[in-house]
Image (cartoon, rainbow, N blue to C red; front, side, top):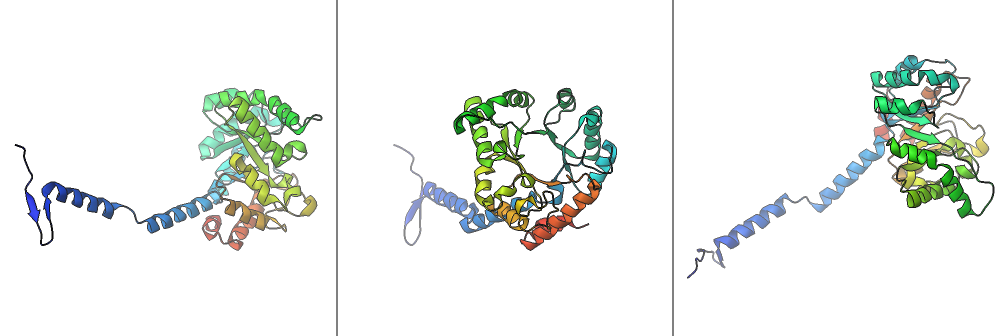
Length: 315
């Protein structure tokens, strides 16, 4: 003989206590489950917030602000300036005269809460400092263009020429960004091919692309397709005012004919990674050059309807 749970009768059907409990539990779970429509709207809202975040003032990366600064600031002065401008990330470029102040630059950024976002090319003096201060900047580096061979042979040769840096960056837990600077090695198709080769043959998941609009005037017209090609590998995208034939090459954002649509394209592409702005004008105080780009980017964001990001540029 076995135990049989009592039954509960309604006007229509009799259920055991066990069945009732299961029905009540099922109903409770259904009530707690999110509505698909609300969940979809929530996802869209989250995506919109993420889209705006990488164009927020505090997320921008300041680039070409060291040797190009007409005011010749020292590390402390530079950190103060960047902080006062509401910028929290710096990609550090340098010349021989800056090597002795590498560590001071790191210390000043830490003191001011600035992210040491990237380091230009390489210098052996940086390795012990990276280890000592536990920083992980991206390493931005150009690579040579092989003169002979098929496309595949050139890609292989270019990739293999980078191997010492690929291995060093992996050892230090750094990303290596291939930097477009014109020529064969600055073409998006070739940069992507080198990244893919390194990934497939050397497990180099840490290698990507740093794309600079000021070195990409030849791709104004097909920027949408080039961006889509590069997007899986992009580590940073540096903006610039854009006219045909690089006339002029360096131009504040908002002063060119094409950057508004290019920035709209960046947002529509779903790219959510870092965005950089330039100085790169040795005749001008870096503060002035950055201010021109901040003002121009704010106006551009307002034009394309990203008022959330534009609001972060208010003084």
